[in-house]
View 1 (cartoon, rainbow, N blue to C red):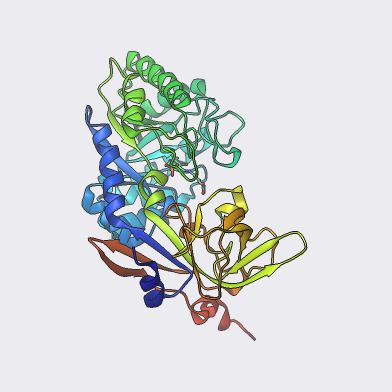
View 2: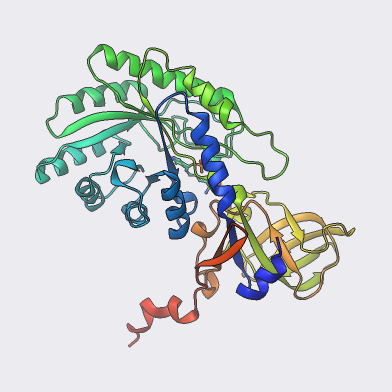
Amino acid sequence: MDYKALVQKYDTPLYVYNFDIVAQNFMQIKNAFKARKSLIAYAVKANSNMSLLKHLANLGSGADCVSIGEVKRALLAGIPPYKIIFSGVGKRDDEIAEALEKDILFINVESEAELGRIEDIAKSMGKVARISIRVNPNIDPKTHPYISTGLSENKFGVEIDVAKKLYLQAKNSPYLQPVGIHFHIGSQLTELEPIKEASEKVADLVRALQKIDIDIKFFDVGGGLGIRYQDEKTIEPYDYAQAILSTLSGTNMTIVCEPGRFIVGNAGVFLTKVLYEKRTKSKRFIIVDGAMNDLLRPSLYNAYHEVVVVGKENERGSKADVVGPVCESGDFLAKERELPPTEHGDIVLVKSAGAYGFVMSSNYNTRPRPAEVALEGGKDRLIRERETFEYIIEKEIRFMV
Ligand code: LLP
């Protein structure tokens, strides 16, 4: 890829996504589950760019959404309502009402209180809400604590006994129709055993529910499939699917899978330009024009993203921190990396930045968010323009007195 040409055309900081790789990743998961009916509901939160969603819609993807905003994005991008799921621990009344109105596939319920709200809202609208209960299987996914969700100390889902009670409650309500069951134990999963264990526990619950005439049609296994950022050993989609499918004997459910990172993570890069180099007694800093407001993962999770200086990949170097212009010591993209000497204008490529990159960006320090570009069939095109100063202050300026 000619990153220099892209930077000349679109400037930096810049996100670039390869839509052909997105398609390959999507098909890999779709094919892994082909032994059963399946719905791959892309987790919109990972990267919600409209052109990316349209690309996924064309591939047949559904959408896993965590706000009504994401639901509306998915619909606008052409994902049909019957492929859309609405998850999240804190849905507002208006969000629930709008989801019911849009007639999406189902709402993932995360607490007893939420089930009650959904019932009341459906009743007031004269509707029947299709729901799925998110079960917390209390399993350690062995990932970063901030992105681990399947332990009882986490805020997500309900315990198995509670789930059973909620299913009975839903079955007995004329305004609720239990159609699915859901679990998601964490993100960036690199071990198969916790997934299999969780799937087994939840499948056991499905079989118990069958006995009391509650017929679950959708087995929603969440997302979480990890990717390689550094040298992690990752799980093959085929093995992941097999681990889940092996727990489902005696059932005839459609698999719903909500991958986010796996679809877009390694399909995207972040490009930033070198401004200066600076040395202190103990450190070498490469100061670039991209910062924590553009790509937060290193600062927030101490996440590792591989970085290279474009055109100098094979040059020898010394240890350096790659840091941004934001006024925080926590503003860094990479630490203690072996990097060649750089000059003003050199391009630093940050890899695996397609997931949880742009979506977690902010205007901190009044920095306009980066532009986004898609590559498809060897061609590049702008899919989000760089923000401007005027755009950032637009919501404030007219209130100045
Ligand atoms: N389904 C549910 C219910 C989720 O909570 C998530 C992610 C996904 C699916 C998609 O997970 P994935 O396949 O992308 O691992 N910002 C963090 C990741 C947060 C993940 C939150 N939930 C990061 O940058 O690593």
